Image 1 (cartoon, helix red, strand yellow):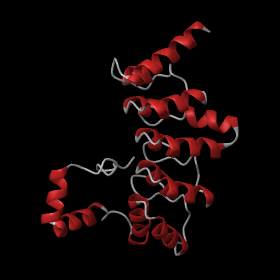
Image 2: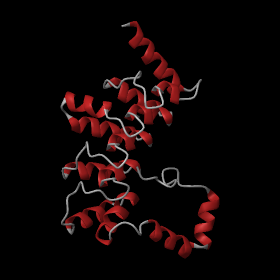
Image 3: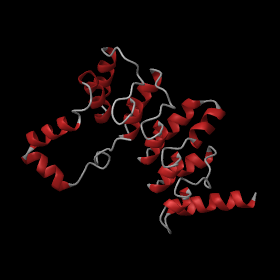
Length: 207
């Protein structure tokens, strides 16, 4: 899974000031960050990370490869747009047939990325696109190399709305990762996320 580099919250003021003063230097560093990505893939990666829908559309039109081709850290374009929270780009890629169950180098699917970022609308869109209940179940149970399901990712970020969404579609609050941790144990005590998960676990225990 690639890392958003603070794009979701805009970064801190110090970083913004540094960019203003040394914009050229930071731009060069960003280029270095993409240096391992083949040249023909860079326009696609840049558009996906920035959320520029027009640029993404144009880049895809001139791209001869597969829409699910791994770009960065094994991430497909759908992984990247989910990771960075760009709903219009996610919608566009799904309309173009992007694979909901493509796995990155860590075994994560796009739903993992959407949940890790707390993007409820994107998670809902992905689940809705799955249509088949069996496929939804399979996606909710998909684990990455650390044994984390999408619910583990949402719990770690304490994203209450995403947690509710996943539980409503049948995600298991009792599934443990390779460290023996349930989603509930990943949310801090006293938080809304922890309360929601504890209630879900209690409901499972009572059945």
